Length: 174
Image (tube, rainbow, N blue to C red; front, side):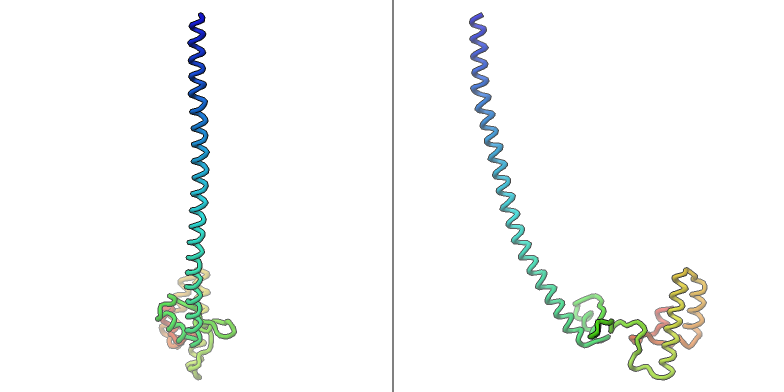
């Protein structure tokens, strides 16, 4: 019986003598890994933040330069500014504003400088017909809209009417 007790004590001391230090070593390794991971995460975050600052500076400079070029081309005014902006590749499309921040190109129902007399009346009639057809389309009355297009832009005098930018309204309606 004394021998059984001695065997149990040896096994107990062996387990306590081996398991306790092993557990402590594993705990220290785990704490060390956590600290190293946190330090690496912090270093990586700082590096990414610096890259973001650099990229933001490049993007800000790009858009500032683009805005400067657009403003420079927009000084021409009207259709010439639009053509220059699109031709230079600064934008796929643009709305050119005048000095009062009102759209200069394209301008809805603005008077063109080269319209005179009957041509002006034709253009005004064509614009009114265009508005009527758009209203019919919004109410989903396509039969009446098609009849109005036929009446005004195929057979009528509005087929020669121009919009504010000098384009045939009939081409749009047809």
